[in-house]
Figure 1 (cartoon, rainbow, N blue to C red):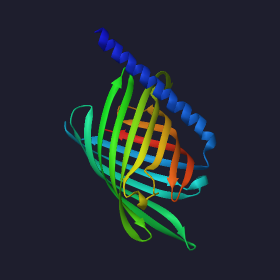
Figure 2: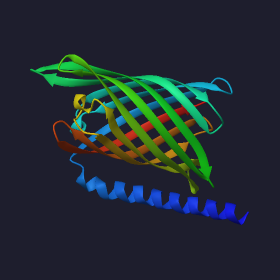
Figure 3: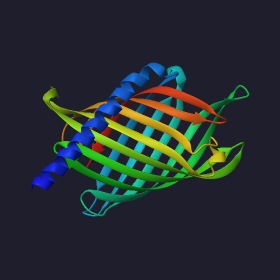
Figure 4: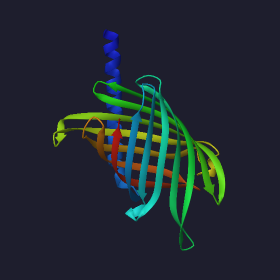
Length: 243
């Protein structure tokens, strides 16, 4: 029993340090962002049986300096629940950008297939999410299709705020970080193993057991070809339904 309590205490200490580190990084990094954008995000999840479920995401992203709509993302996937806390998924993502070329707007689309493993558990009242996702990317590079693979790892915490309510609804703080690594044919992307990193801090309001609204802030560091580091402040509004 003493050993179990000691392990739990160490886990809570580690998670507390990780959360504070991410919070401080996002706050301090915001002053260094070179560009600003806004994202609108709709998320839907449905568990259809004890073992199976499906989900979909839809995003619209503005251009830099909040100028118009730049990016459309639509993603759908099926999930198999190994246990209540572990799941694997298989899905497809459509990622499109509107770009200016020779005084006209051209829509360029990237197609992705992805596989993922997700582990969700709790440390006391704090929700902890680990997600590993491998993407097979079919990119439009100079009007040719290039294949590349990218690995993504997300670590997230959901921290209930028992003392803070909105219209008598519970709220929570969301703190997460996601790392993106080019693991195959990096020359089709930015020529680097490191692709981007996205620390995030958000505040969510749970309307009921199934509906949630969230506002948040990303600080994205993205390496672009040939060797340019682009920092971006991203403000997000997210609406989620989970059944």
